[in-house]
Amino acid sequence: MCRCGCRFHGLNRRQFLASCAACALAASPARALAAEGGAGGAPAKAKVRLVFTHIPPAKPTWPNVGYDYDGRKKDLTEKLTQACPNIEFLPATAQDRNQAKKLLEDDKSVDGYLVYLLGLWTSAPQTIAATGRPTLFVDDLYGGSGEFLVAFASARRHGQKVEGVSSSRFDDVAAAARCFEIL
Picture (cartoon, helix red, strand yellow):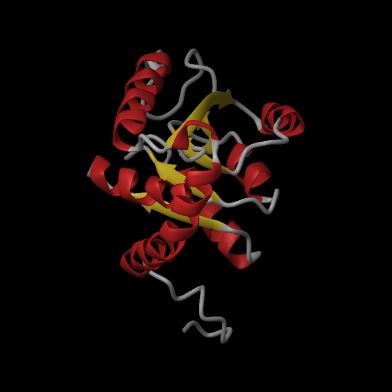
């Protein structure tokens, strides 16, 4: 428990993943029953907007000017799709707050957001977190670290439905992303 008395602010990554696993286990019978009544017997996949954030590659930023964001996005999308077969990822890019707002206006049927911070200082993560939908911030190690720290801390202070992962192990990202399966 944290100083404010809320039981959520003191939650660490291991506790978050354990909670997600418990929720997934509890939701499994409900998803199985839903699948039996569905067409073809396959459960509906959770729809998650996969938002990559970074400024244009021609601008000076971290990791470097001219960084191949498109290649990195393609690689991460493929890895997430393979690691999370029960989630339908809907990739998009937001390079600033206005692009994030436009994206949100068009999103009426997504279950949550996975915001992959590839580069710095877009203000898109804060805009997405304010929706109130389940959101996972992922720091592409060293690429979005500064904005990840600021945006995640702000979201937590405001009690938004946001968790975060900053890890050199992609398996940690995949494990956290699989929590969307219960939606």
